[in-house]
Amino acid sequence: RDNNYLVAKAFIPPQEINNGELQIFVIKGSLDQVVVRNGSRLKEDLVMRMVNTTVKSHSYLVKNELEKLALLLNDIKGITSALSLKAGQNTGKTDLTVNLKDNKRWGGYISIDNQGNDNTGKYRTTLGNKIYNLVGLGDELHFDVLASNTFDLYNLRADYSFIIDGYGTRVGVNSNYLKYKLGANFKDLNAQGSTYNLGGYITHPTIRTASLRLDSKLAFNHQKLSDEQKSVDLQQKRKVNTTSIGVSGSWNSIKEGVTYFSFNTIFGKESHSTNEKKHYLSENYQPKRTFTTFNYSLSHEQFLPKSFSITFAVSGQFADKNLDSGNKFLLGGLSGVKGYQAGTVSVDEGHIIQAELKHYLPVFSQSMLVSSLFYDEGFGKQYKNTEKLSESVENKVRLKSIGVGLNLIEPNHYSINFAYAKPIGKKYNNVDKNQFWLSAIKTF
Image 1 (spheres, rainbow, N blue to C red):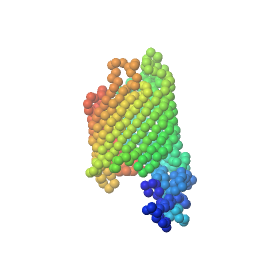
Image 2: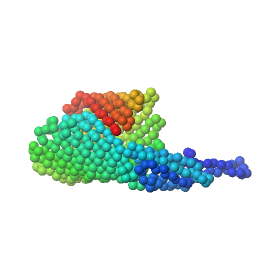
Image 3: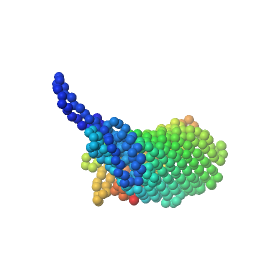
Image 4: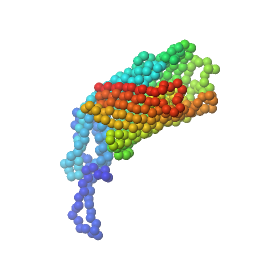
């Protein structure tokens, strides 16, 4: 078994023992018949292609390849799968049966949170819907709609993808439209704008084992941005084309622990146009330019006795030059330094270090109450290139916060989340003394 011979048999044939040596013969065990009992909408041809690229790609039945087939089928939403083996009609042969059934083929959710800001609306509502296996290719169709409580911000997103081969490679297209209008401190500017994205991507399950999952992704995106300040008759338009390549996955590297990772490089090309007078433009203004960024994230959660766990995480971004606001790295927010709002500080290059202690308590019949203590620290440079930067600008920034969290979760039903975070150390300009983060999600 340790050498991947899943159904191998060893036997000792009749023999004369010479010099104390005993010969043991091994029948590796090969795959004979494959039967697909398909009670799902997934096309049988796609299943057989997965069989051919895994368990049928060797002369004998390989344990890792059988695990890979099970994991690839498990990745497909909207179906349940089970594999079974039985002895074949001939010696050394094994038959494989693949059982497939339709699972829940659609789902949706509604969520409410306070992760917005005063300029476009503090509270946000999101509606989402997912449909699986429309054409039997393991395809997924996602829709999401977000709106702020002031309706000064709304966002529409759609994504469709499907499997193209027996290796589990997935091709997808996505589109996103965002429209905003600034209020609060910027209301007098009568500022508004929109963003439109159209993209395509390819993902490939490069490694699938019981302990290691590695996905590779190649993506292309075209973005159009339009910003306007009607009070001063200022208009700005931008086009950004990007190509990104990256990997992500998880690794059960330590007993009772799991490590998550992602690495992504983006190559971008921008073009700008504006009716702003030349003498008002920034010294760094360029109508056309290219840029490159590298993003990473690495985290490990280790489960401890007494239903505790501890998580350590690092994430960040490197850049080759000064970036526009849309490509900068955000230090604040719920996924960053939680004592600051998301838009408080954005940097060309920056890093976030986080530590969190959690306790899991089963409550009710199926729910879990998760309480936590956390520490966040983020630091970075607002501008990569400081040659033309005024000496009065503090380029290097550092944010720190501590806090507590409380989450009530029932998987596939609901999640209610609360976090309180307090900035510590040197405070950044004009920030609240603390942050309260609230969200509630209901799935159906």
